[in-house]
Length: 369
Image (cartoon, rainbow, N blue to C red; front, side, top):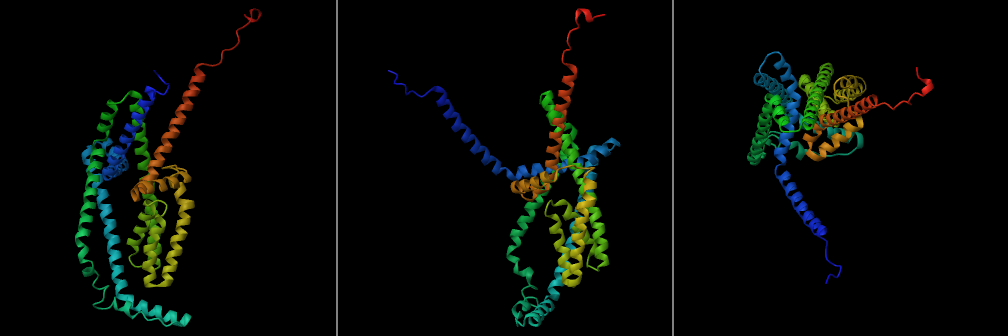
């Protein structure tokens, strides 16, 4: 006899689906975590492809095969990147050697300043010995000899990831049109239109982002090169290029990171020069924020300041420095797509209203002709 306490069938099904859904979610999260490196590589490759494909498309329109155009674009990008790291690395190594050689004199100056200013006698003999012949700083390479294997493994891993990104990017750029056609052929007409629109908007916004950042980086490098040369800062070209590239391609905090190196280099040679370098960097940043940047980005990548800031924070939280770098083009793409979708909805509503206007009152018998 039914006592009214029988569990309904739909409840049993809901419980089963709940646990199946939980297990599937747990498994999916595990898969994503296991494939996190590959997914990051794919995302980076996709947006690098978005940045490079406009140049390849321009060459393709002039009759150059996409494979050759992609190879030329990769070669130019590789040469520029190698030149940047060579210049900055040489300047950094030179200034490190200068610091080690002159550190004892700096320590003596600090001791004298403390004694003259505060009447405090402090001896830094142990620290000074680190920089003298046979000291710890002179034998820095041998001190880290045990870490060579780990450092080598890290370098190999980084090179492998860069090679993987380059491989995926080359394929995405060289076979971009075919890839889009292949994806669109497996979707409905409406879905294919949406995918193509998002792809084109992402490519347009990413290309414009790279274009605007490159212009601002060149202007920044030229201005700082002139300023550093006038102030007689060592390695003015390398430091100016460092400031231009880092300040533009690292969102939010790039300007602060970029300014530290030239300030410290100038400070090592002359405190007064270091102060002037700091003033130049801060002053130029204000001029760029209020004069150069709005005029360049207004014609390349329009994005609300609050959205840009929030996107950088979210991207950093999700993917670290890679997420911070990709945050702005992703946010610009999302903003442009949503704006286009809303405009299309508004145009469709207006067209529907025009096609079906409100019915006018029928004419009366005595009002007709």
